[in-house]
Length: 172
Image (cartoon, rainbow, N blue to C red; front, side, top):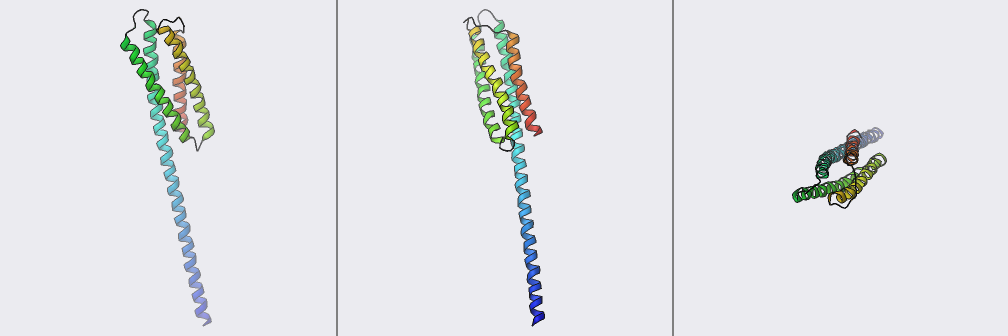
């Protein structure tokens, strides 16, 4: 009877150990799966933010060119060109708001660096909005002046910040 009990205890110990190992293996697989899902999510954010920054850069460059062209025209500025500029600005503004939301969502893993980069971009965007007000005064003959070079520099700095954000997202 003593050998039967000890064999039974030994077999129960083996079964328990196997159950413990199997449970640990399952937990390990779940952790790996969660890590893979996190990588996919992070990569998806990076791709999405990257696409937004490329589009925003292209739109900002278009606005820079359209505005400079309109600034160079001293007489009748075509209404269609002014409307096209307004539509372009609306698209840039909407993309900027959406980009801010994406960055906020992506910043949960790297909040300090990413939010600092976004704060720099927000500052450049504010400068862009201020320059637009001055330019609108010039375009509509209200006497406020800004040079084409200053305008070019402000938009280029905004585009540079978009590039910096895109680089940060892909490197992080």
